[in-house]
Length: 600
Image (cartoon, rainbow, N blue to C red; front, side, top):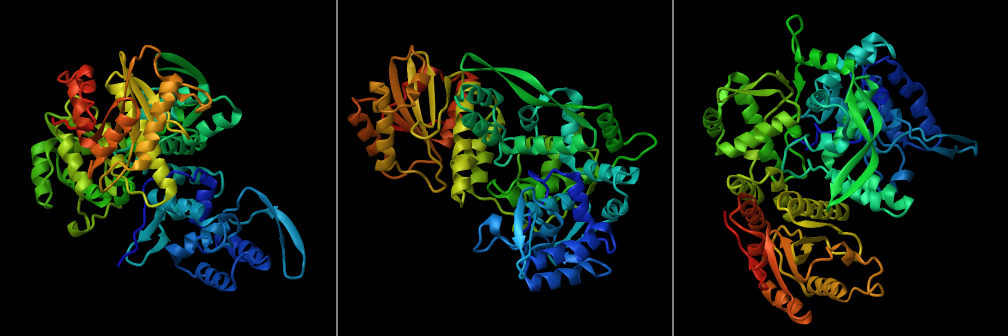
C-alpha cells in the first residue's frame, strides 16, 4: 500500500537559495552533492550528530549515478525520544540546510567547535522537499515512495548561482505553481494589499485549511493589546492558513523581484470603533507583470503548464479531503477535453459515480480559480485555459465522503443570501482534531468565524473574546446581549455540568460586574445600552439531556434564558436573517432553555 504524502500547499519554507540546494542533492557532482559528501556529512559524523548507519547509507545514496532516494531518508525520522532541538540528523535534506543558532559541539577526542547548527529539523526539511515537488523540480514516485530530479530541476541544479539560467529555472518553477499565479493576479488587480486581503481570496472558500483572519478583528486585538508581549502574540498567532500561504508566496515573489513590500497605515472599524496600525503590504512590480505575461503566454510564447498535485485540491484539515479532491480533479479533467456548461459537468461527473449539484459545481470552480487556475465563463460554458501537469487521480473507491460533507452539500443549496465561506463553520463544529494544539487552533477558529458571522453578516454587535477566563464570543442587538460558548464535537454535544458551571460563572460575573471576581472585566465589552441578557451554546448537534443543563443554568442565575443551537440550524437562521424572513427580535424570542431549530 502506497504511503500517504501531502503536497501542494507550502506554508513555511521561503528561501529560494535553500530550495536550490535541496534540488542540487540529486545531481551527482553538483556543488551541493559534493558538499554533503565531502564536508557536511563528515562534520556531522565527527561530532556525533549523525549515526554511523545513516552516514554510510546517505553517502552511498549520494554517490549513485541516477539518484532516486526514499522520501523518509530525505526528510528524516523525527526526534524520537529526544526534543526537536536536541535530535540528531536523520535525513539528507536536514544536512544540506543549516539552522540559524550557534551551538558548541565536542568530538570524541574532546575537541570543541562553535558553529551554526549544521543541520535543520525533519519538519523544516520536509517543507523544502514538498516545495520542490510542488513546483515541479523533483518528481515523487508514488509506488516506491521515492524522489528524483526532473529536467527543470536539473536546469536549476546546473545553473551557476545568481546567473540568468538560475533565474529562468526558478521563474519556470514558481510560475508553474498555481497559487503564485493567484497572488500575482490579485496584486495586478490592486496594489498595496495585506496578507489578510490576499488570504481572504486564496483557496477554497468555506473549508478548513483556507481560513483568513478578519483584518478588522486583527487590528482591534493588536491596538488594544496593552503590552509588547501581547502585541507580539497577536502578530504571531492571529492569522489564518490562507494568510500564511499568501505571506509565504509573496516572500518568494519578492526574492524574484516580482513583488515589493512596504509598511502602510491601515484603518479598520470594529464594533463602531476605529483602529489604525502599520501593516505590511504587497504590490506587484513591472517584473512581476512581465512574469504574469510569461505565465499566461502570448502570440509568440506558449502558456506555461501548471503543476497541480492532487493533494492541492483540498486541505488535510477538511473532512473527506480525498473525496473533495476527486470531485475537483474530475471537473478539471472534464474541462480539459472541452468547454462545458454546468449541466454538462454534472453529466460528466455522473460518469465517475458522482452526484454533484449546480451550486456545488459553481463553488468548486470558484475554488479552483482561487487557487490560481484560469477558468473563464462565456455563454454559460466554462473553459480551462491552463495545461495541467502531475495531476494523478486515484481510484474512486479511495475517495468517499462522510456525513460532514453531506451536511455541507445539503446546506450549501439553501444558502442563497449568505456567503458560502461560512460553510467552514460546519467543519469547525464537527472538528475531531487529534492533538491538543490542533484542537485549540480549531476552537479558536470556530470562535473567530462565529463572531465574524454575527457581526459582519447579521448586523449584531459583538466580538470574539475567547482567552483565559473569558467567554468565547459575545453578541448584542438593541437592548439584548448574549454570552456565547462554542463547542466542537464530531459525535454530538450534551452539555456537561462543567460546561454549565462555566457558563453560570460568566453570567454571575456579568451580573455583578466586580473586578474582584475577574480582573480582566470582560463584561465591559458589552454595549452599555443592553438591559436583557441570554446565553447560547453553539455546536455540531445536540444530544442527551442537554435541556436539563440549560434549565440548571437558568435557575441558578435568576431565570436568565438560554438556548443551544446546532451549526446547521445556525446557518439556516443566518440565511433567514439575511433574506429578511427572520428578525433579530424573532431570534431573541426563541431563548426558552431549549434547542433552537431552524430550517431553510
